[in-house]
Length: 524
Image (cartoon, rainbow, N blue to C red; front, side, top):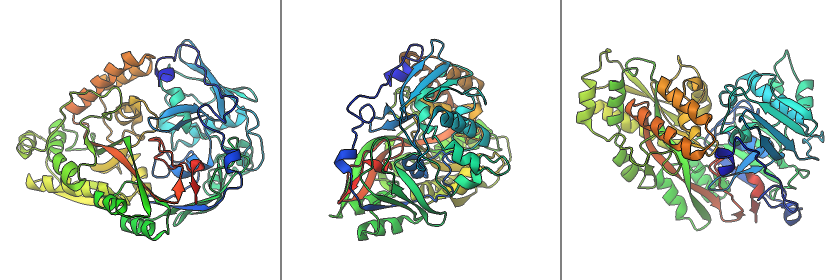
């Protein structure tokens, strides 16, 4: 991260080496040309679209990672930002102009060359459709400000300096502009077409999509890194955890997403035909609290909620000590996380003390979990138990991720509380503090609809500061303020447990993408 956080105001160069596909990433074409096989991966979240600009979550990241390419890509753990479609980039002294040089010879799946105009179109499309990563780029990139200087040079002219912009270009998935323009309907930027069809340059080509089933993709042999190791990838939507586990044990699936109850992880670890890979992660488990709806708009009620959750029982009993308590908005392993932040404890006497000071009338509280993600449902039930013990009525509501994701973006539809994870989209404390707390992220990552002018000021200062040593204290201060405000219930940092059949090799886990990039894999 030094080149991103310490070098924004100087020239930054990330060039591909002569003997590798991209810096640090071995060209695997010769080693795996002619390789085959098929992997079936069971996913707990439904795929409701194939538009790479319509979603911005890990639950549906597989089609974006495998079928589309970005300028840069995060790989491995700890995450490293590597050149991908770009060979290099430079940054202006004022930190507002980023100029990327694209590698030559890259083609889309239909054989059309990928050029700077496609990058410009992709950025403009993100800003126009206002979905997916839109909240990430909207405060920084004005429509019409991105320029193609020539066929292989694209320039982003930011409205304000940003210490994280290069880190976020992973999420500018480049689409085939000519193909989408041919398939536009009534100025929709090709949304109806790309929701079900392929317009990428990634390692795999979408061949079939069914929202009730998932998607099937075939290897793209002309990818600039060379063909991937597996010929076909089949991502299935399987909502029930037990069905995913049984399918993996039977061999119906070769892999599945790792976020399941600990007893199921133990069950998989005991199976001689499976490998359950483990890795440190930076996936924060927390509960959004709707800060702008009564009675949650009273800080005393929010503190009541924070003291009503049994953190020790959750971590040690329900999850068997497989996760680590995380008291603030920034994950413990990340710089910018204050090491001495006490956070909240399970204390019903303190919860009652704060409850007695709430002015708004009490009502039934809606506590939500996510179907297909059993831990969020379990956590919602655990909080309900604490609320019942202090006399607060609550109702549990569990819905699938696509429904949850849409409701989060509407303050009227958003639940009173929602248990979920904040994944790592880029390895910087702003990924958590900025996305979850800044007022500008309302209807985006800030589903708590939290707003504090001092926090906004500190976050803006952190974005305009290139040096990590100066940025870290700003994020630490944000973490302390948001904790005192009880902006959300911050619970734990997750460890990644990736279950795969033993005939699968080459898994490269990265917290950005949760190890779902299939191009590195091979199967016996």
